[in-house]
Amino acid sequence: MLVVTGEPGIGKTLLMSHLAAMATERGCIVLSGRAAELERDLPFGPVVAALDDYLMSLGQAELWELTPETTQQLGLIFPSFAHDGPPGLQAERFLAYRAVRRLRGYV
Image (cartoon, rainbow, N blue to C red; front, side):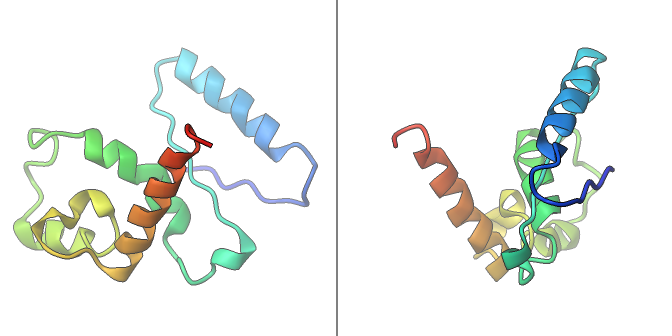
């Protein structure tokens, strides 16, 4: 895991784009998440943003060791695990975020 912080405009995004491209070329799985100062009420925000789409792509074979209790607890944070009941508040926010993200192709 790598966390990059700094003042706006110093090239963090460009640096991370280059690092992600290099890692992808070498066959690494590259996941990314972002946080903003105004999102302090989402403590797992960058983690959920980085992992949720990847977790959704995994099948039961990769997740076979997770107990139902574990997946239920993960459903409180990750929308991809919220299929056993209503998602927690954190997961609901990311479901809404994902829906808005899909709109980008139409706007």
